[in-house]
Length: 466
Image (cartoon, rainbow, N blue to C red; front, side, top):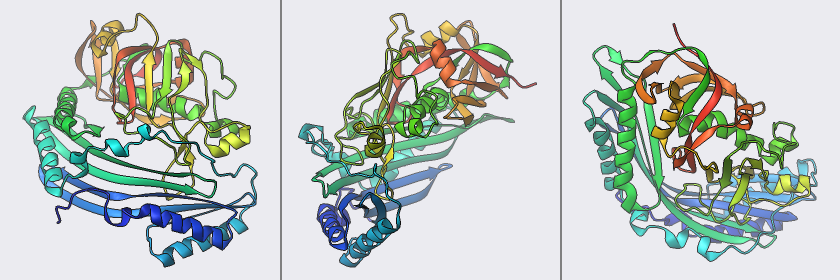
């Protein structure tokens, strides 16, 4: 295994030249308009499995996706081969597909706008992070596993993974868009459980993404401590009570039950297809006391990006402002259908046509009396269930959710008393948000690209085991 640094060299280094070439070939093949979106770079990954070094992987490569239009007819191909023959085949195939596709007046390429150079990630890439080698990535995976186990002798680490990625993104269109950017990030994750004699607690896991290597040790320490605390806390679980009333949700569970349906409902695609419960509610109060922002300008978020999949500049967008629904998310296609403009939310990579999605969500409270942190929220709950993860089904169209509470705790007197097993929770995200929920001022990033609070939600149906 080579110890080569993970800078964006090799196949990715001339990605912009190959993108220009593919664009020219698409024109020559008969495309009226064409867009080339490409990503390339290197990645290193090391995985510890049950204390032993498992898979170590080093990858380098690049992929170009070509979208062509002929009189509103769409064709798309992608290739991870950048030689002249592969580019020619991709261009010819995309044009052939377009000629066989039905026309759609909403099919159009972006015209773009100037990207503020200060927004580009490339000039701020941490040079130390971009040059990590295999040996250091392996050592960080070993350290993460060992540090998690060291918190308590009863902990067994199933997997600890550390990955380093250095990447380049290019976008070229016949409509005049020509943008490039670079990025580098370190991702770490750990999954573990605890055993005490015959008692085996449930699994828990966590992850973190960062762009500055100087933050890595502290982030690993926080991650290992959080997972260790959760899995040790899962021991000695007792059956839960059945009731209908307030339940506390950690950020991970809040994402599953509430944020997921909300973001699905503000997708203009869901609105246009009749699958959004919020389609007619723009300008109405849908979540009193809560603000939901998408902020891809926040470099601390894994979702930070200066432009979207179509080259539209990204910016902060208030989706919900002090409870009131202010905006739906649009890409170029949905904006054309609506007679509107893109909000910069085209999503996806080079292997498919642009999709639609948020980049870097932040949820915050506007209530002056909101609890400061997790501990204050549990004191406000007083007595009831605290759900840290939720495993089950969520209907993004209706907002109905139900599932098993994972790493759940019973709260008595505002404090954690014991772990809880065999508990199901259910509710409707849109109804509960509209009735009002309490969220903390403290927030964390459980998924790397979302900054989220803890939530106290009344009216949850809880079904305990026997």
